[in-house]
Length: 154
Image (cartoon, rainbow, N blue to C red; front, side, top):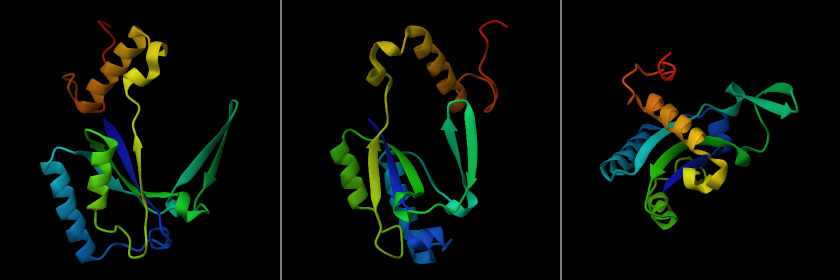
């Protein structure tokens, strides 16, 4: 199963406080363990919400709001995408993580939807289209990364 592991923002991360060398080294070692174990698929830190925007959808209307955003505890400061056998395995990996913030912090783990979760709503045509997109994103279709998907003979 794939899980998204989200490092929740803190007052320090929202203030733009960068991790010190000791924390960077500890997180580097931790990420190396994840990679060696075949768990980590991706992972990045995020800039504070003051550098972000939100787009609100209401019918056909879109409203863009510049950050920063209130409720620091609801924001994400970084993430990993992991491939694990179970939620219990993901929890064990998170328990081994160095505290990613200078103050108390929180990490949330959520399963990523898989094709089977969508049941019959994911028709064979939609499933094929999703697979083509995955191949393009991973660079496995022979086209350079970022190229549009092939159009089946066009």
